[in-house]
Image (cartoon, rainbow, N blue to C red):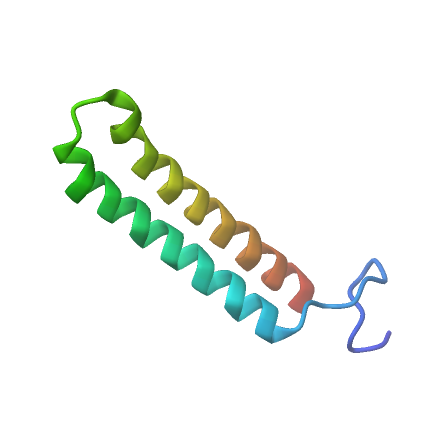
Length: 75
């Protein structure tokens, strides 16, 4: 089997894309946490308070998907 191919014949993602995706995931998680703990406390409406956890959760999910795909492609 070619080293650049995964088990199902799809090419492995370039490491630069993986690093970029992980940086975006970390940035989303940090931005969501800051939104929740700094700006979320200042807003009185419920929509403003719920945006931070949503952004942070999406960042965590993105990081999980990227790391899971990276681990599976390296086996």
